Length: 88
Image (cartoon, rainbow, N blue to C red; front, top):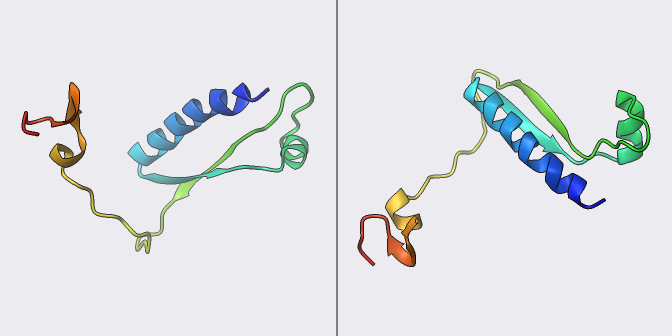
């Protein structure tokens, strides 16, 4: 069932966001389903379709942070291309 990937994606995203709010790092993993099922003891008809690694970042992280654009540059208001401050 292809919906299992969609159905698992939103809760996985929420878990990742919650981990971030707690100061933890997370990583989505797409497992080999048979191996993951065996590892965590899941039996048919259920399947492990996603794993989430969660852990503490080192005190000095080398993770790259990209610069964010101001919201006014990327948010449209009611009509595509009309930015939130009302200007086009």
